[in-house]
Image (cartoon, one colour):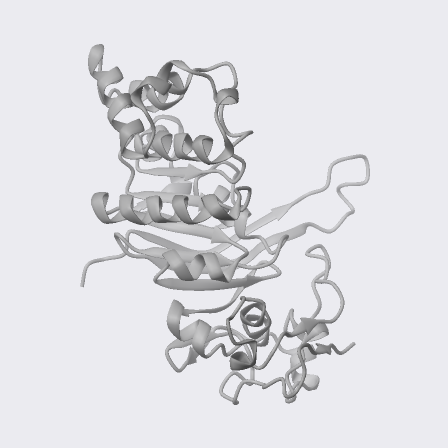
Length: 339
């Protein structure tokens, strides 16, 4: 079998608060032991609600911030062990498309200069060949080559995101991390950008780590999915299997929020009680137990943290993942939780 392109093992990223009393404050456990693999040409969707740590995973893999512990290897090379020139060389092979198409482009640089920057740094072309390559990249993402002399403020949000995609493609990466690339766009534009990302992947063969909070978006582009909650992956597997038969209660709640022509098909909406616990003070046992609605929840959930284990076609971190998913009968919503 072909070895995976990206292997992440036990990734941990904790943040320390600043200020005079920061040494006494507990760390914020943004990422608390995450492991996954991505094959060449594959898309893994990393989903979860805001604050679960999914963006921290992507930024840490790219070394935009330093990890607390763990490992990440791209094509067999340990990313976290690289320094200066080695890291610069590695960054040609992994790029990022940012969430904010307005803030991710330098307003003082023309579109052409923004796209050409990586080409020049990595010496992929020189002289007139740089401009030719920029024009080809703009055309590839559906923009006119003449836009190269214009500035970011002259474009709409969807056009700016296409420019960001062209910038990521410029250095011919093997892995692109997409950090909620369509969440800031109008719904009508989201489908266009998703179709563009899928087409580019088919043509070029690179892999995506696609970070999102919307399962409906992930369903359109990913082959596998990993669901995060409070810094940990609680369920992972093929997209169709996870969405058709979720085994973790949190995934069930996320799945119930996906719009359906027939809402009764999936038992109605599950509304979780309360707010997610603070990542600076996670609860003991299962991190989801304060909001869990599973009928089998008990003292074990409060004291023993479940690990990911095979359940059907996927893996789930729930002590009772083998039990039939809870149906929400005769109601459009369910509010549940335990102390």
